[in-house]
Length: 124
Image 1 (cartoon, one colour):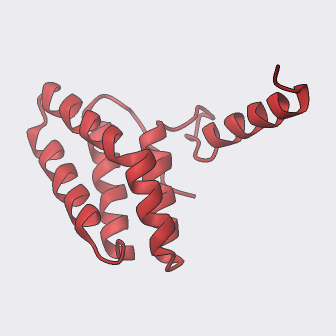
Image 2 (cartoon, one colour):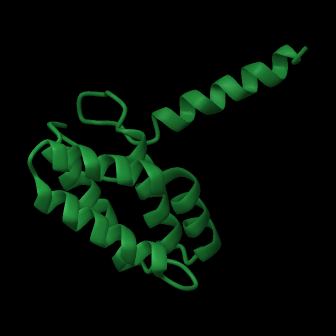
């Protein structure tokens, strides 16, 4: 049986992770945007290991799913830009540059907009 304190702590962290980036109307941002914002933040701080870990652990697969959704919604250009930006970050050694990570954030926001998200928020 898991102690209550551990469950309470895990629940609090989950709630915090969801509200890291919020829209102007207070709704949480899509988790893929939260992840790429975290990648960009780590890249700006020069923490290549963290940027790569967050990219591969939290952003990589959701970015593929977002590109598929954008393509299905009729915006192949947004999907292509997203995949190109993802590939630059993915192949960067030792990790993504701040410019590449910021380009990924911009491409993610554009792909979200193409899928009907009316106002993908900027990164904090």
